Image 1 (spheres, rainbow, N blue to C red):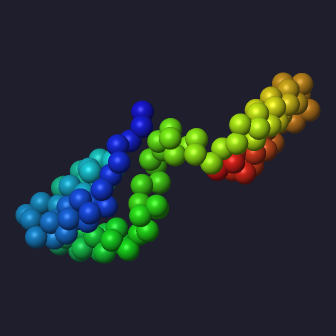
Image 2 (image 1 turned 90 degrees about the vertical axis):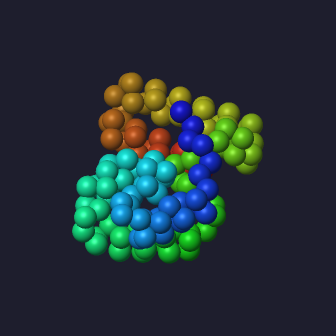
Length: 123
């Protein structure tokens, strides 16, 4: 399931509203962090969430726009920089690596490490 585009402006406004409102943590729900949002709501009778909301509001504002939503991946953005030949080569390398794992020539840990290295080159 793809996450919808989150607005940094909305997240900052919700965080700063947490400083002024009697309850805080709505920015955490907006950002897809319901556990933290619930914790903020439960601690709303203390000044801790208000201070955290103020700090997080500034931190959200200071983040670059491309780093704002790291969990977000859209298919169009994922396909922009990929060359079909590169994808084909990656598929071949992953199949060969899997064959080595199935033949018992490398361990599961080695397979996972090499697989991640290959995928990190593309990303």
